[in-house]
Length: 313
Length: 292
Image (cartoon, rainbow over all chains, first blue to last red; front, side, top):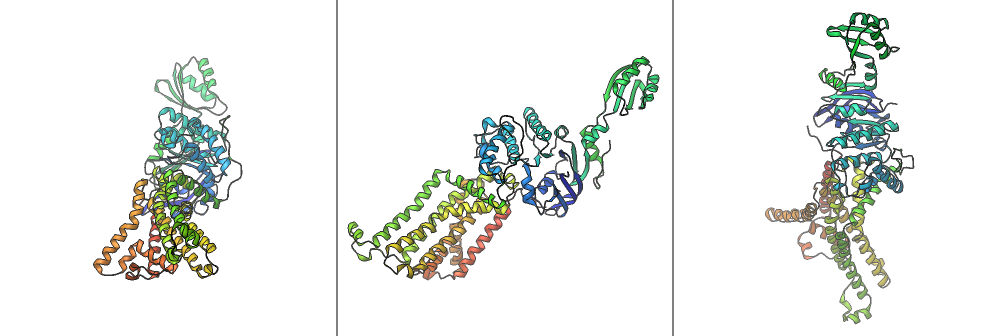
């Protein structure tokens, strides 16, 4: 199911073109939105929420045009903004209930779900305190609670770990993973932190200067690199490489007993140990190469931003 | 979600109609207004004149009561357009005091912690948001302006000799229209000015200043340019003229000196209201405006 479809999306604010010609289809369970400051991440989120109208092209959320179906889209979306955004003089439970009622829940279910949402994010014990008295981490969590309370189909998180200490960050990431793994909610997560995206997302959209720099499926990228190994060996390397070629591996040898190889699907790494034992070769180190999101991001930043680029690893 | 299982559960129950979300804002607006003891004090004070005027009507229609209080003169008080004009004016100026207190409470809490992005990310439009706040304020002001005025008119109609009501229906219409125009204007003005100030006390001061500072400026303009049109900025005078004409009361000495056309007064009020709408349009947004 397509979560977000962008078709030549251009957004102008005043005389400035903030998003330019974005085209792509996002289907992931958790979609990461990456880009340097000013790349247009928040503008894209605001456009998806209907806060900005596209000046050209279209953006669709669950097939609904953001220009024509604002209310329907907002009814299906939970939004956690980057900055502080709450009513400080209200208690946590009252604030979350208020947001649930605005999303369309009747008063009684809204109250029930407000309690549940606050317990779910870990604010159950402080739900009767004014939001103003919450710590920064708690404020982030109450924003998450209000975004989840009405049971959205798409949860948009703008910098969810902004300003959190490592423990609070880990807690937030864990919550996001739980929501993702539950499978009922799709996620769109905007973050400066590659690690956050790497830990939570299966698809990533990278923006640079308002243009699409890369759009790739992280799961596919990860699985395509799963069979790429780097070995450090001691002993009769040449005979060993002949042996593993016999298994159908693509092999490249380097000085110092270093070998790079790609394992075919039917071959497992334990087969290499068997051949090594037969040839009297010691495998001192085996690295499974995995291109990090950082590699993808840096390649995207190096790419020509004038045109969308598929990132191959 | 479940409290005991701590696992996520999507909501599958009934949803309220989209149009009804405005009334969620109204309900929470009322709650915010009435959570303040000062609001209760101001509201009570705003209703005290009604008791005074009720007593006046009672005395005017009850010779025995007049005798008991020692007011034997038959003309102790005459319940006419002038009486109802005084009633309307007092209630309407008290409405300004109440507006200056409750309008900031409706808006500034949302703005102080930047709640608009979260609120407007729900299925409620900017118009719906303003409408919700407006209805909450307008309803509260109604309770101290046209509602008590019309109730007093009804009491007078009940207590007075037969035929009085038929001859004075214009008073009822004038009371309703005069109060309605004023509280509509106050509501939009109060919300617009409050939306630009994050601090409630400052917003309270600005709302009162927005009525009286232009009055002073208007006086200066009229004095320097020797024209009556500067008085259009003087809301206390223009509203007094409007109310007096709506009720058909005899013009006061000031009214005779400053003879502004009704159409000009209505136009100036409309112009100010349009300005308030423009202010709201610029301010009530989920995001700050980016100007390129």
